[in-house]
Length: 392
Image 1 (spheres, rainbow, N blue to C red):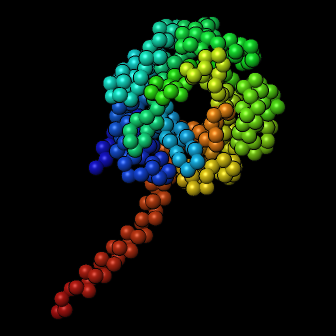
Image 2 (image 1 turned 45 degrees about the vertical axis):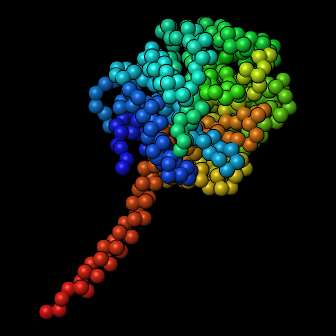
Image 3 (image 1 turned 90 degrees about the horizontal axis):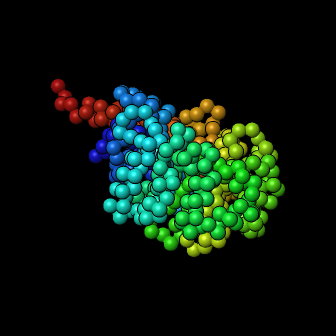
């Protein structure tokens, strides 16, 4: 029997169950989703607003949800990830509150044997929020699988010490983690990106994988594929070609959308402990629903990237969302791919609101489908009951 959770936790559980259904993740996924949210949202999942205490509606929770989902698509496999900003138990959201709650969640994941946060501890003093300009404190992410929580990650706020110290904070953190050489490489080979460093996330994988990554993000100011690939050329021809391919697969009008006003693409530099002299990879994030806003466009772009069976599963989410949203909008706000070691894997990001809209549309469609069947069954039962009446 399903437990009905309140607030953000209930919204996340319902969203994950819906994704499990449309993506065919198996019968065990429902229970795993509820258990994962119970662990990850412990202490604050009952909330329905980031800004105030007191009562609220489910729609309040949808409109203010501090989490989103991503689908890592590789061959015929899909991995569902949950990214979230933990909140304090009550009161308005603050960087300090998210920091403290995030530390508690990390400690619980470590207690459960799901995280190894030793590297995170090496830099916590750098990222502890102590400036009025601190943006969010701490965010976390993890895969939610039928087997439980996997691949946890922590995101630190590079504005923790203020905007003027953002670059210094990133450089110091990389040096402590044995990546001083990679930071120097980037100063030489991506000077524009380092000069315009995105004031946002510094991320660490906190699992036991030997490929655990250290990542930070920069804005893509380039306005054409040629400019973008030239920027990536020092990482290798494969990286430049993969970036051009992702743009081609995500934008119906070639590289023209790179010149659009609005959300800019993002480039994430990635390092691992295997080599401290240079980045191992980069991930390119494109604002997918800006470049391909309609259902037809989104489906067409994905057809060239995904295994046909997986395309059909992802297409259920696209179709459900299209049924719920005027304009048949693309539910994925980002499409991302690793440029060196990613193979054909593609990651799609979708909001809590988009998934809730799609889930609600599917529930309504299922109800419409069942209604005639229920009526037929009632009619059949009535006829059978009438035929059994004794003759007078």
